[in-house]
Length: 320
Image (cartoon, rainbow, N blue to C red; front, top):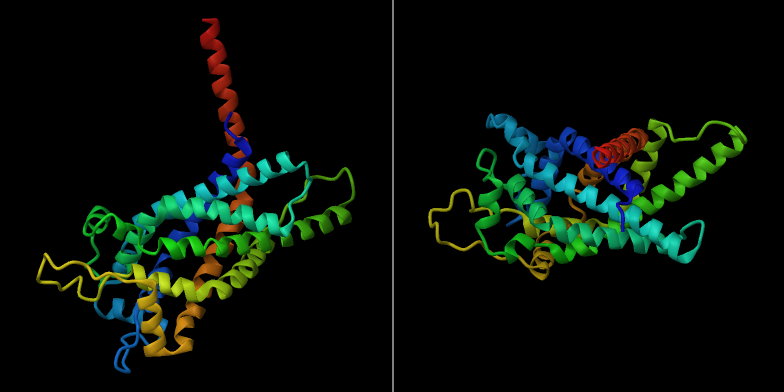
């Protein structure tokens, strides 16, 4: 089976968009992650709001530590988005070919998006876990990728995989909402433009708004699981000042995390940091989709040009 160039174009543009949006918003992501990872103890908490995390970095002269784990996060984000967009686009094309349909319904779209998300979660889970531990380590004391991954067992690198698989519903909901809204807007624009006109595409601002709306819906519905995952993957509070090097890393379970939140913070604790999560993920996803929409055409042209060059080169070598 040959390479699916259309899926490759979608995957490449999605991965590039993810790389740029992740880098731009990474300090906010670090603050958000550290804020989410903290559980109130004895009625006290270190971070009462998101700005407290930022102030800690400023007061301790560790501003650059807001970028700790950026390389790992970018690697994870690039691979995740490439795998997701390639799988999502490929599964859609395969579904249309096998079913003979001209369009995909909402239920089928959710299933295909979830399947692509599951593949992504399995492939990138170790990087996801490592980046979370780096971000939640004390400012200035984050370890490198290899040391972070090898400080525990192999199963530790896959902490939170079960929740990650559950959270495949997040991008499934997001991209389904985005695609449905996009198709409706494009159909309306096509009717207004009339036949024979140039191809209709979304403007950057419209893509941004659709991305923000779709991610807000997905984030709100899945947030309790998101916070539990962050707490499971977070670095232990005593990791940075540990004197006993042979002390094993404490194992966190989903049931233990749920109980800790319920006992110390109550029901509202499951939504601690929701505003920060929505702010970060909405901006990130909106930027990602906006960038992807703008570079997809260019990426497609480049891939076709490279393919044509390789074919011409192969033909010259055969004739030589």
